[in-house]
Image (tube, rainbow, N blue to C red; front, top):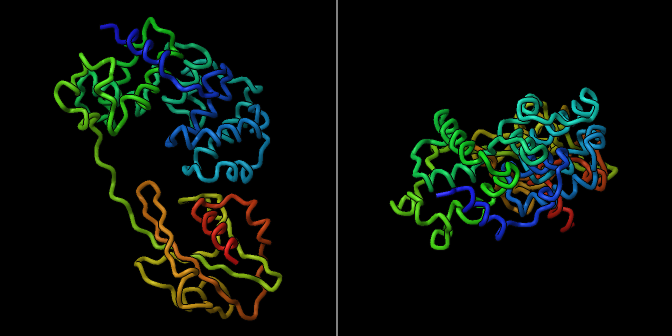
Length: 346
């Protein structure tokens, strides 16, 4: 079997026309790879287009304020990716004269660029013969070759990377790597793969052994932590809203939010809870959260239950922002959804 020829024939007939596949610009390729980590192409494409238009060069990105970058990133999650993107752009612009490193070994030394991203840039932009191994590639190889090794283990990563590199040899690196990822994304999918029209059907061990649904092997995720967040919506006498910037640690680092109380259990905050946030008398406008509803939001290993409350402060002026200015700040996407709902119904 010539794995590469079968794969490349499939790719030439079936691949999607995506903008980052029509360029050798390492900046745009890097931008697409960072955005598409943990993100589906359909969701990531508008973000890629917005970033490429707003920051068409690495210098433009390097000059951008962090809050502006986070606002444009809003909704993609994993905000450390955006911060690393900005910091790495600054390093490339200021320390490397705006010139991207052109090898895997040099790329991997940059902040936020791991083996996968370094291999993608090196092969797509510079045609270096280095295999790209992502979740799609793990799945394709595990099924076709019947590899029953945990893909999150050191042995698993080594085994799959070596196999992918062996298969890549003597094929165009950019096209081969794109083909591997595209085949996993479109054909050999996690659920309901298209086995009955698969060009590898005759030699796929997972198909012949009825193990398609069992491969690849991946250790179970950690149990999600439940968290209960209560946000106070505080209007001052100028019809402005109080907001705070989150600290430099924990989730949503650097984003903005309303005054927050986190409860250990799924219970409602009382007056003393709210009063602990301010050195003044405070009261809730209602014993029920705004809209009588709870907003659910899932993060990696965290399930958030969020409620919003209208509060009244007595005897103190709290500086706030006008609603129009609030929309300009980077906020967690669940807060953005609340804002659209809340002010859309006032």
